[in-house]
Amino acid sequence: MALLTLKLPFIIKLFLFLATIKGVVGYCYTSIFGFGDSLADTGNLCLNHSCLSPPYGETYFHHPTGRCSNGRLIIDFTAESLGLPLVQPYLGIKNGSGISIQEGINFAVAGATALDASFFVERGIDVSTDISLGVQLDWFKEILPSLCNTSSKCNEIFGSSLFLMGEIGGNDYNYPFFLHRSIEEIQTFVPLVIKAIASAINELIELGAVTLMVPGNLPIGCSAAYLTSYETADTDQYDPETGCLNWLNKFSEYHNDQLQKELSRIQALHPHTNIIYADFYNSSMRFYRNPSQYGFTGGALTACCGGGGPYNCNTSAECGDPSASACDDPSKYVSWDGVHLTEAAYRWITTGLLDGPYTIPQISISCVSQDA
Ligand SMILES: *[C@@H]1O[C@H](CO)[C@@H](O)[C@H](O)[C@H]1NC(C)=O
Ligand SMILES: *[C@@H]1O[C@H](CO)[C@@H](O)[C@H](O)[C@H]1NC(C)=O
Ligand SMILES: *[C@@H]1O[C@H](CO)[C@@H](O)[C@H](O)[C@H]1NC(C)=O
Ligand SMILES: *[C@@H]1O[C@H](CO)[C@@H](O)[C@H](O)[C@H]1NC(C)=O
Ligand SMILES: *[C@@H]1O[C@H](CO)[C@@H](O)[C@H](O)[C@H]1NC(C)=O
Image 1 (cartoon, protein in one colour):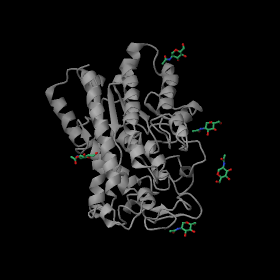
Image 2: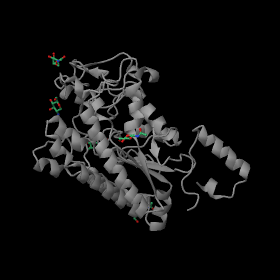
Image 3: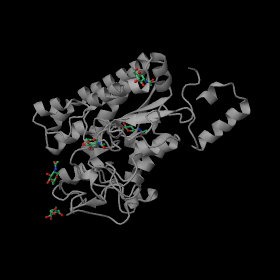
């Protein structure tokens, strides 16, 4: 950051530019602040949850960390690409682990919804945590004084931070879908979910955030848990190329379209910010279409870790339960436990975002605020 605000000779700029193309380093982001659900939770989950049992974490950390995967998540690969340490979970920091919070904090919690938990409880829908997006924002505001005390200091810190707003919203649909609530009912949640995400983004902008990356929903019709829950003999419901359920992917597309429209509105109202859409859907669709090209020889739809069934996804024997077991080589699978993806899949999604075409507008991982 400081480096680039100097008037560097052209040749050095050229060098930095070339270094960026190779994805070597990020000079400008000094920290990452994360919000979201189990796709981004790096250890806030303190409930009695299967993600805290082996074989979760077996591949990279060699023990469960609270991450709902065998290894690193998209937020971890993003931090690595920016040359930053893995983003520490807020609850670990609160418990006084003594680590630096200046390089970022992760507020994401597995099971979190964009809408308040009460929204679901009122509709007879059980949620596994009440740490919704609004609560995560309250956590952020709680810790704010230990980050910065004056608005100019806050603007300085947050102006060079990357805010990862999600993925969030997926659970707002997962809970009712797994109860087989009607799609008509669940569709009515979409504008409310988008509004909740937008309001969190607006609050962060007011607090000084400049660059926000906002992921859309994954193609839920390709999820082993959805494929199991909505298995049907009606072959017309499946995409013949991928084996995914079309109507569920259409639902994800609907959410993603609405989200992108809202992001454009926010961007137009705040021209000094960078509101970046992270296209998880299309970045992952690549390997659902051509699994073997990405090394997924175990297939893209069957879970690595599970308790049997056509997609190795069984609600009475879930990954982490003694009655479930994991495949030998998770890197050959897209789906880790039926709901969450493997480290290998998350790595491909991240390279698609940071080095590929799946951020809109394209994220610059070298420098954001030369003009500021
Ligand atoms: C955690 O789950 C186990 C098995 O389902 C149960 O026996 C135990 O009481 C639970 N603990 C808490 C704190 O909920
Ligand atoms: C933080 O400490 C509390 C109370 O000791 C504990 O219940 C919780 O699991 C801890 N959380 C983390 C993330 O370490
Ligand atoms: C902000 O002020 C509080 C109270 O005076 C102090 O404890 C804290 O360390 C300060 N934070 C920073 C980042 O200077
Ligand atoms: C990406 O995904 C969305 C659904 O979220 C779809 O509408 C769009 O056409 C896709 N874009 C590309 C370039 O494939
Ligand atoms: C799901 O798990 C239960 C409990 O382990 C087992 O009895 C059942 O056969 C499994 N179902 C399938 C389809 O494998």
